[in-house]
Each structure stands twice: as structure tokens, then as C-alpha cells.
Length: 165
Ligand code: ADP
Image (cartoon, rainbow, N blue to C red):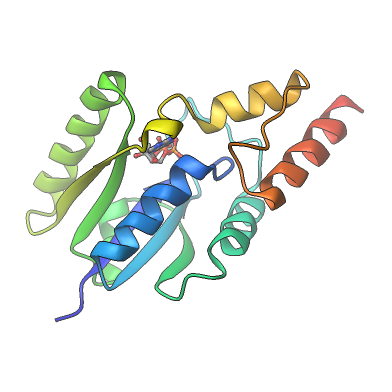
């Protein structure tokens, strides 16, 4: 039986930390759905629109046959069910990620008992990387090229310039 895994997140925007996790998941499972959340929890106000976040991820994963980018809104478990996914992928950077991720996995499990969350530890070079920091460094004029795909780099520069006007 083919196994589909969902890797959900806000991905505002996608970084090499995210793509590394997705590619490693794609080596473990038959299909990976990179699921871009439309309406994340309220304290995250995305800088990039849903369409922009999806388009950037599509460019990044273009070379990967078994990674599909989709958007979703509402409960992740409903999206997972609709796509016949039994695995949720989450990335773990540091101890600070752990508590929230552990709660989320527990909640998802109680909502849908036959779904499993699989945590993948970040690759060491991306331990300190987050979308928030990439945006902040780009805003302050720092070089974020080592942390994001060239299409994301260009989009970040354009977005920062537009926000300055
Ligand atoms: P969310 O709104 O769900 O927190 P994010 O886009 O911030 O969405 O992150 C999606 C997932 O990717 C989370 O599981 C997060 O821990 C993981 N992640 C984010 N940055 C990295 C990174 N640098 N390395 C590994 N995993 C990461």
C-alpha cells in the first residue's frame, strides 16, 4: 500500500529548513503533500499571500516528482483524511519547538487516532533558521541567500521593497 504523508505549515516563506525536511520525508514515504495553511493560528499574520506561498513552494519542489504542493484551510485532519494521508510530518529544531509540537501531535491524534505524527530533526545547518528570522534579516538588509531558494530570495527582496514604499 502506498503511503502519503502531509507536511503542513505556514511556510511564510519556504526556507531551506522546510525543503530539507520535505525532501527527507519524500525519501521515506511514497508521496508527500507540502500543505500550505491558509489560516494559521492568529498570532501568525503571513507576509506572503497564500497564492504567493504556494507558488514559491511549487517552484522549489518542481524537480521532485513525489512532492506535491497544496493549500488547505480549516482542520488539518480533515485535509489529511481527504487526501488519504496517514502520516503528518513536522520538523523539530530545538527544545523550544518540542512543547508546542508535542501538544499539536497529541491533539491531532485524539481527533484522528489512526494518524501518526513523524518528527524529523532539523539538519544542523538549519537549526537557527525560521521564516520569521529570514524575513527579519532580509528587512534589515542582511544576506539571506544561504537560507532560501533563489526564487524565495527574489520574492523577499521584492516584498521588502514594496513594503518600504
Ligand atoms: P507553523 O505555522 O505550522 O509553525 P512553519 O512554517 O513555521 O509553520 O513550520 C512548519 C514546520 O516546519 C514546523 O514543524 C516547524 O517546526 C518546521 N520547521 C521550520 N523551520 C525549520 C527548520 N529550519 N528546520 C526544520 N524544521 C523546521
